[in-house]
Image 1 (tube, rainbow, N blue to C red):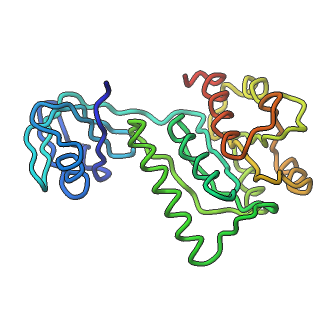
Image 2 (image 1 turned 180 degrees about the horizontal axis):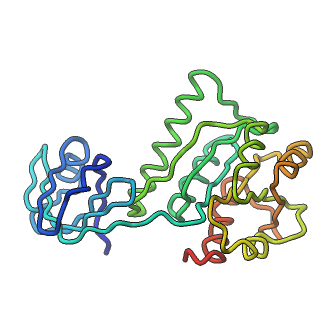
Length: 250
């Protein structure tokens, strides 16, 4: 079984060497000691959420501090191309289900999208709270899946801003049931792309024709996932599985 993962501040692992000691305090230490009940000799991973992982064992623990002896330091490079899920806001918690699963499956970044047909609307204080909730969901999924990098959650975009973002990306695919080409075949044609790939998922009511036209004009292509219509919560994770396989990430 893999070691439990605990987060440490960015940069705090930069100077750690094998056999060195790392002290973890605060909420992460309390969780390790009081919830996980870790004791001396047990294995743990410490990650800085930016790609550095220390594999070690517990040297000592008490209510406010966890001391870990480093056995191995691993620097996990960022992958290319980066896969970015553009997830339309959805009712209930379907959008949160989507980003949680996508994080477990290896997504590199997430963009909340306020589409024309989204029932949910992020405005004012609600927008800030909702964005914080998305970041919390993704951070928890990063820890659960033992990742060393936490995917970035960008600010919410409306459709006009998303079109501008598409024009700056390496490639963008609108997942659409009326597309003629499969996502797998279109990804296979860009295997050597260096940059980012946007995977765009619409809301429950679908993506409007005007949005599809604007995204096409910005450089996006429509792509078909398979013979069945998927929910907003499952389309993104399904697309990520296809991308991971075709692009050789898995």
